[in-house]
Amino acid sequence: MDKAHKAKIDAAIHICEKRFQQFFTVLDSRYNEADAAYIKNFLLQNTVFAGGVFRSVFTDTPINNIDVFFTSKEAVVEFLHLFLADKTVPGKGPIFGTTNITKGGEFLWSGNSKREPMLAFCTERAKKPTELITDFDFSFNRHYFDMYQYQMCFDADTFEKKGRYVVTQDNNKQALACYVRMLRFMQQGFQIDT
Image (cartoon, rainbow, N blue to C red; front, side):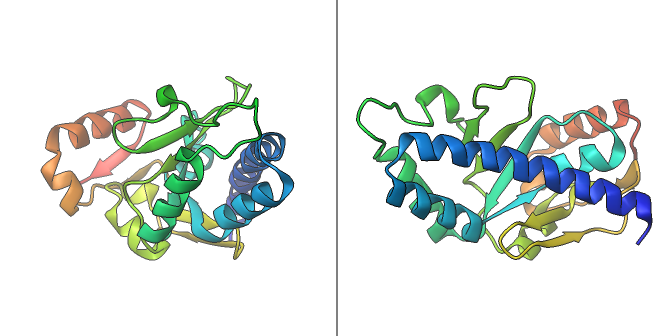
């Protein structure tokens, strides 16, 4: 692997790990010790980082957020139970208020820092990571990092500002949204083949 590519992978992983660690610090402050340890272990074992954060670091474009995907539907149910039941220490509010949950099922956390990318826990697409990335509509977004297994997987054109548009079941239904995304990437200098 090219040294420059390895350095970018390390930088992207560092950003993800740093934000997760900051989120874990908040868990420690809002939950009793046993519950916080359970939640942290659960998240490490049942989530992966995927999508835009890696593309942004690899291509030197701004990071909007860090997408965290669940590896099974059962994990999503457990996540919802853990965070919607609000078992925080008395006097501490929930981590995800109603303004931090999108209609699309993303649970957004920015912590106290508005300058760092927010974590977006995506509850809609729960799959094994290798299946998950095949649903991504642009080849340069097809990568994930599993922090628990410390494993990175990526598409061949991940490191370039060029790629291909991939028709998937989801984006075929949402043609206008995909077109808007394609235009945004092209404005950032990406070359896209269809």
